[in-house]
Length: 124
Figure 1: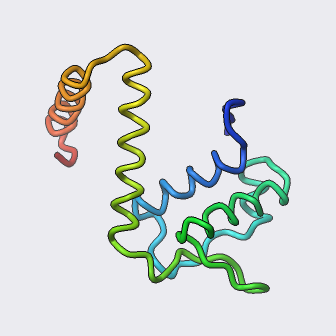
Figure 2: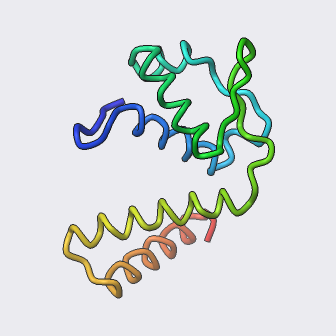
């Protein structure tokens, strides 16, 4: 995985795992990979990976049981998932504004992408 020098690596990894949780790749209560497995996967030190897990735990997405592992918080409410989706949408809008697009242009772009995806047989 390529990392952006603009933000700490552990946050970038935490955000990637958060996205996986929001997309439903991990369900509430499901065990995540171990810190060592993630460290190998992301090619970072176990300390960096530990910080990423602490970041997710501070957000309430992950609970860690010492000696057992880390799990998607079984009490994660639908509202937490909604907040994460809204955060992703805000980040997207911010990036599009940095590229010089106005609000209506961003909406038009998103609508076009949704239409194209629907035509391919994806979810719309």
